[in-house]
Image (cartoon, rainbow, N blue to C red; front, top):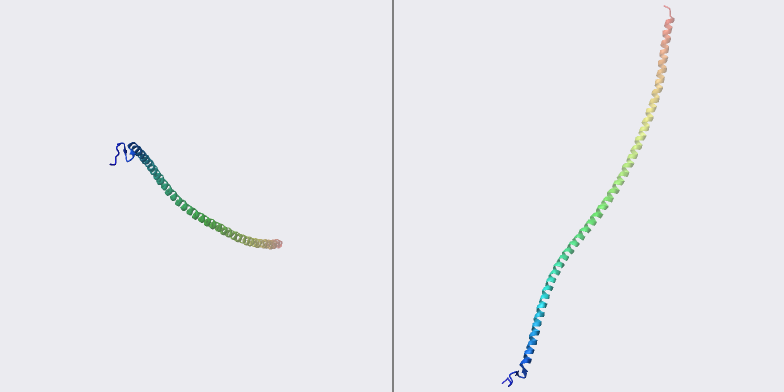
Length: 161
């Protein structure tokens, strides 16, 4: 028989020792179950944190893509501004050269107009001088003619009728 005479022992194991041992095992298993529950709660919390972090990472990637897009747009705008500035500078330079040409043409035209006006004024003055001389000559001839006519009138009075 496996049991000894003493009912409290079984193959040299006492019932109390076995119960104590089983109680220790039960306590350890309960602790392990509690630890397991605690670790499961921690895992659930960590899973939630992981999900939040993944969402944050997704948002950050989206923002990084938008930032990269904005940086590309900024580069495009900067290039457009540089081209516009160059075009503006070329237009200014062209307009300045054109204005210089127009001013030079205007100066030449003004000079030509002034010279023509001076020549016309000189010609007009010469014509006026010639008219004055002709008028003086005409006056002298008319005066001479009138004087000769007066002399004839005086001569007619001297004649007896």
